[in-house]
Amino acid sequence: MDIIFKIIAVGLMTCLATIIIKPIRSDFSIIIAIAGGLIILFMIINYLTDVLDAFKNIINISGLNSNLYKLLLKIIGVGYLIEFTAGICIDTGNQSLGDKVLLGGKIIIMVMALPIVTSILEIIMELLPS
Image: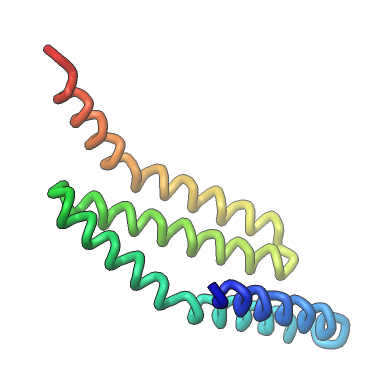
């Protein structure tokens, strides 16, 4: 649980550093913001491996097609990457570009999710009486 406090500390220190540096060197404030985000990502890598292990257990227990779980993990990954990228765009003053990155990510996620929706519909159709 102490990891959350470390993440909060890094986030707050990064914000303060960017606020202090921005009037002096705005280009460095962007680098500081990106570095702070990357530090936080490296701090949570162990937790991501725990999530992947949990998904492997779910795949083994459920007996469902593992490709659906892989696709779900890819969708989650795309979501996080798009959010991170849009945040960087917004932090650099490009709100419009950040919004377009988010829109593009949402469309890609929707397209990636179509096989999952199709599989769910097939399962439902099998369960319904003929």
